[in-house]
Image (cartoon, rainbow over all chains, first blue to last red; front, side, top):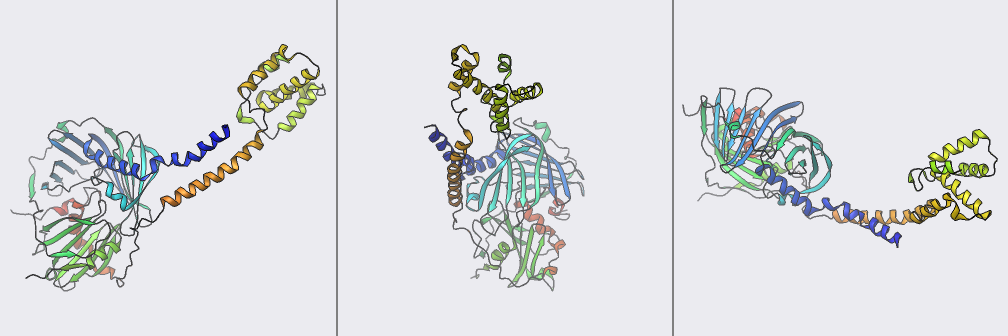
Length: 319
Length: 181
């Protein structure tokens, strides 16, 4: 009798131990993490690390009846700050003592990096609980997102157990090695940062309004084959310095990985437009001429993703 | 004898059951019972009994056996009463444990391994979205892309790529040079 009791306990042990590791639980966890960064009040110090490069910044996030307020100040290097009020982004740039004012809803920074809902990521990445640890002095759970195919890179997320706020993001390369990370070193969650904290002394600075570029542009460009999970996020027309013609910017995303396609008339690139593949850290770049146009694809994805998208691009015949 | 029992460690302490010195200690206990140990050896044994519950159990067991053989009433012995109570509370402690554990452990370990294998296989069923892209593009000319000319593209890309990098990186590229003066 006693033996059977022990036996049945041991038999059920692997099932019980796998509990928080099962897919529905991790999907739920991922959704909570996606929502927490948007809905919680928090105030903390973030370290961004890339190779030997380290940047320290302070992030304050407040959600009240007027909407979402985010302020991010660089604590290392030149004074530099971002202020976001709902979809308006004010960026103080030390070079030239300027304030850039921009309106669009896609400006998202750590820890607001997950799509809402985050559930579709489960079909593209294998979610796996990797353990518990302390991040910024808070009990946290780590989950790895390993790509199910070779069209994207992996991530490791660490979120606070109590509030599900993302405290650490590690970006992995194609060999699953950490390349870049964002981590809170200190954080206060739950107390709304005072409104005064979001007041700036930018009033005397020269403002550079950047008009909303997300107009409905009718684009006759069509991508024939997209890697699994990717969809078009937006398209805009860019006016860039030293370019007489506007550049069409198409953005594709799988929710985490993002690819940009830039299409411009071949004539504004000189006699030898670039053709080929290049990489820049985790950033891959692929350029090719297509008819009278030059196509440049780039993103923090494996080169295969860019080649697939850019090579299947076609322009429908104008009538 | 009674003073020794009072200082014996609690029975059922699992930390030191089945130690390698158990057999030697049992022999020493037996020798002590027969009055064959000298003062120093007896002292050593008593110290061992304090730290080793196997020896302590042997000590008590031998005394109970001795008492029984001499037909002394067990109830009159404080020691036997203690043993009886402990036997009631911990019925398995006097059973030969090593044999039982191995007999139980092997099939359990085997079934745990089997279940792990099954769960692992179940969790790793191919999901159908797995593709291995075949990069058919010709060898690329790496040098021809001048990245400095792409700074504006990279900055524009980062605007739409959450967590692509620190927001302070390349922020100045996003400002059109002296616009609409």
